[in-house]
Image (cartoon, rainbow, N blue to C red):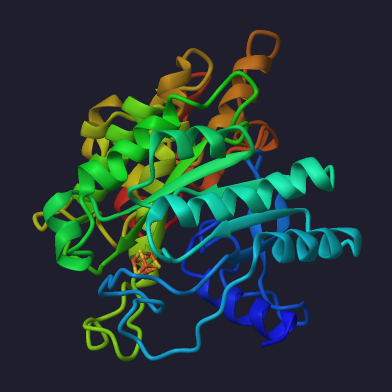
Length: 379
Ligand code: SF4
């Protein structure tokens, strides 16, 4: 198989690894580009083009949802480390990519596969002087020494937890141990972040809707990982059935579910919400017809309206339509100029169509409609 065909095959195999929320950036290889080039979000929110690829799509595991599970009859291919390093350099010199996202199926044991991934990045860094972004996926079950070696080379590391607990994981990946193979690896990686290593932090990913898990389970695990290991991001990959797998007849995860999970994760990570401020319905799911921030505001109606000119930062961040950037701008200008109109609030970046029901401006209240009428609005 030539390099182009392998790039396409191994790039398609990598599409299930999320490098940006699929509601923000496409998870399919970019059309009109050599296979495997995807858009991702950098740590500061900019879109960058990555070569996103598997070193091999052969795998000894048989995860129930996975397109590359060992029992599927599909073409298999691999790159040697020096081949993939050279291709990365060629695509980079051609201006087609700004970084590499490297994962792999597990051929033989996890450490020897991880060693080939690490060797690829060592060749890039040390032989070719490659300084661009590298995201390395840490394979389940690798040793602490392999985690340390990866941390010395990569800008970002990630471990796919796939499910929010041991029982959920065993339903879809029966031969992986949640604690030993995944959480322990994530913890080792978290201890290596800092001091110039892993500058873009540590992330994880869940397959949403494959294991019968609830949104509450996913959000609680997200909260725990942020608090205990300082995860930079949690990604949610909506389950899509793959032919010739045990879950081929399983219903796909609706995109709206993925979107609500990202909104809840954003509230925990960037708005300072605590877990008990996230509202779930009787089935422990995030309300589908209502974004989590509006749901939280409606559940705490007694705290509104908030006076924008005197509210503390955490209070501003609970107002639908005011985000971290607009809150900072409000705090910066209000000592000099009292905010007294919706127009002024809007110039600072607030969404006044959402915020007006929840704030007063210099004592004046501007409600336009009942909060309940905003139910279908996004964040
Ligand atoms: S370990 Fe599981 S999810 Fe990963 S490539 Fe192998 S079968 Fe797929």
